[in-house]
Image (cartoon, rainbow, N blue to C red):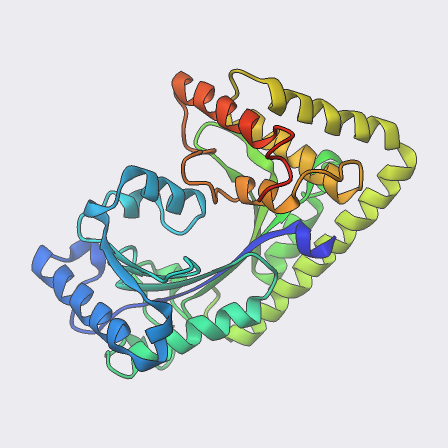
Length: 334
């Protein structure tokens, strides 16, 4: 169950290049120089040939692809609208190099499991390849320089998204906020623009603190995450004893709504997907593919636009799509 509580893991390293203004002050020519420098290094590196990276300029990417990247938390709305921004994407869409966003370079690694060390090692390898040929902005006392002063240091941002329906129901997430703050860790719900926490999903992220090493940052984050996961599992076991039929009823009500709704909002669909995921993990449901539900909640279905679509026609389209996903013929497919 521990592995399925983890929705995804992301690790990113931010870097800037000497003798160029920070991205918000770049002109078109300077921005293109940086894109060409970074892409040339990575696209010609023998160590990355198997990745088959493709360079895409944001101004040339379709709205659907932008939405998918936004929903997976790969890019921000601001990045998607920036004409000087580009992105390198590998063939399995797990490795991304953002160019001319908040910083000149952001190396971002995306995984579906809890493996912070592996994700960091991959990002670090790409960073080494770039660092051999680029003159990074670095200060011996402060570390890597960033466009925002609070991000100066290692340039490391690591986050793990957890599905915590029972701790959320019991309002126990708040208990970890103060603990996290002392460890340099932030806990926040995954939200759309018009709603509260979607699908009981919470992002656990390090806060950049000058003087902390990458190893120390990752160890603190892993310790906090394991503690929260353990408490969620314990809470589920207690709830199954004390309110078994009530939980099962809630799960099947959600399944009924997703199988029959003609109009459904992003907030509501994520709520019911959360219940169904919980039902599968607690063995109430055994004929729905768990990966299907996780992929839907993670925004891995590009045509669905679960979080960002807010028009009434989108609510109708979303309901139709979800009904089809949960028919008897499709519910056990990924």
